[in-house]
Amino acid sequence: MSLLRFLMLLSLVVWIGGLIFFAFVMAPALFNPAVLPTRQLAGNVVSRTLGALHWMGIACGVVFAIASMIDSRVVNGAAQPLAPRHILVYLMILLTLVSVFGVAARMEDLKRQMVVIDNVPHDDARRVEFNRLHQWSTRIEGTVLVLGLALLFLTARRMG
Image 1 (cartoon, rainbow, N blue to C red):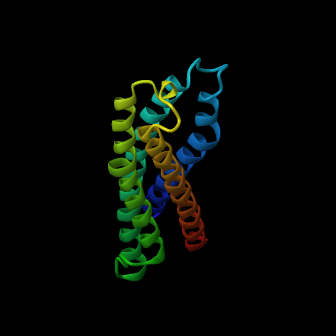
Image 2: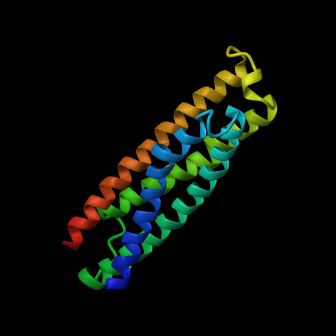
């Protein structure tokens, strides 16, 4: 049982910690002109690392869900797939999949079309759409983070 709970906590720490580091440390640092000379380079690094973070998050979500259901079965005699903690992790995984296959994929397509975004006029339809999708990406990541913190709280309370 302690191995299962370790896996549950580790998966949350990796996913939530990655989101916090990405949002509050890495992305702001990369868009600082003293770190990278162009916003294009910063955007390329952010896209690449966010993609890796998404796949890590999906894997962590699956590990959490499986370990938590096995733990529920051991403790309660049933897996409880619709327990609040499982619903939260399912939502986190779903939102991350939407981000990967919907928002990020479309943003990458627009970036390829524009080549260098900063050279495209602000009123160009592609740039307007890219900026709109970027706002959605930020909202989705923020929502996943808040859900993750709620999930961490529920998990810690359950273990206490």
